[in-house]
Image 1 (cartoon, rainbow, N blue to C red):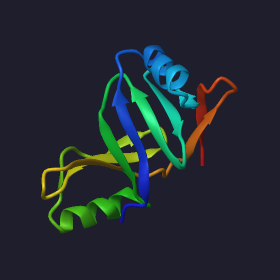
Image 2 (cartoon, one colour):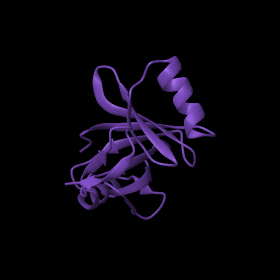
Image 3 (cartoon, rainbow, N blue to C red):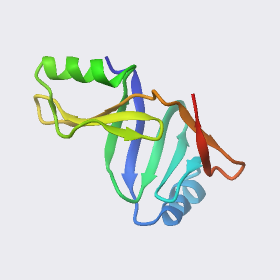
Length: 126
């Protein structure tokens, strides 16, 4: 069902402050950024560490296609916390398993971010 951890989101008060700590002080490489978020590389995985000014902490799990994954999750006792919502790269939903764990499931049905040389998001490519 779950393909991989897509990202771990950490809330920061300001993207530049978060980048100063996680990139300059700890050595993570900037992959992409928007005004409210930045994706950073982690060693030995393609999962991202995402700094965000509006949400977090959260773990995002990638699924092949959101609708059937959500149907399966709910069919075995999981509950949705909100309705599915659009992301620039796909669709996501926040769910709770029978044990109280909150997870975010997402697909990348729209593609992945494209960036300029500075890491600023310029669009999405399939």
